[in-house]
Image 1 (cartoon, rainbow, N blue to C red):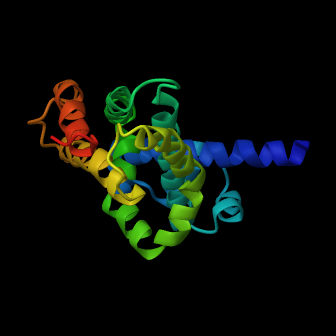
Image 2 (cartoon, rainbow, N blue to C red; image 1 turned 180 degrees about the vertical axis):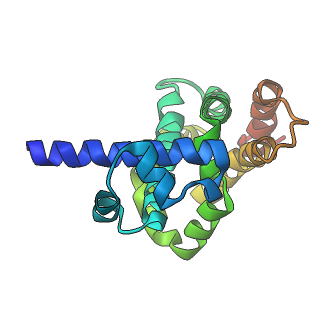
Length: 200
């Protein structure tokens, strides 16, 4: 990496970190051009040079943290573990991400992120392809071994992540009637029953 590229990367990181800090403190309305440039110490021209607009900055921030969430999920998969152990690991990793990175988790589960996914679904999915492929490669041998029901990949994903996303959204919305640690204990077994080749 050339010195110029390194400087550009540092500048981008300063802007993204500032945007996340502001989003965590005040929500999307707190992420203004003035606030981002003041908090980051980066010029307005640099913000527009790297991201094109404030919307471009927020989109890049959402994509960065969505990528980190999925990397955490893949990293949690036990290399030689059973599918049941994998479900427990993925659920635990997802809920740990929500607990450990509340601002980023709020952004990833925000209406803005949903709108971005609806408007550019195929593009977003293509960007996530390496992670999705890694999860598919992990689950396929468990399907072949009659451990996991032979369901289409998107349905398996929905059955595994759907309940976890619902709990995360509920928690992040301020409704704290579900404890994340309790959910991490209860959900894996319930989810496992829904995808087990043996059925519930």
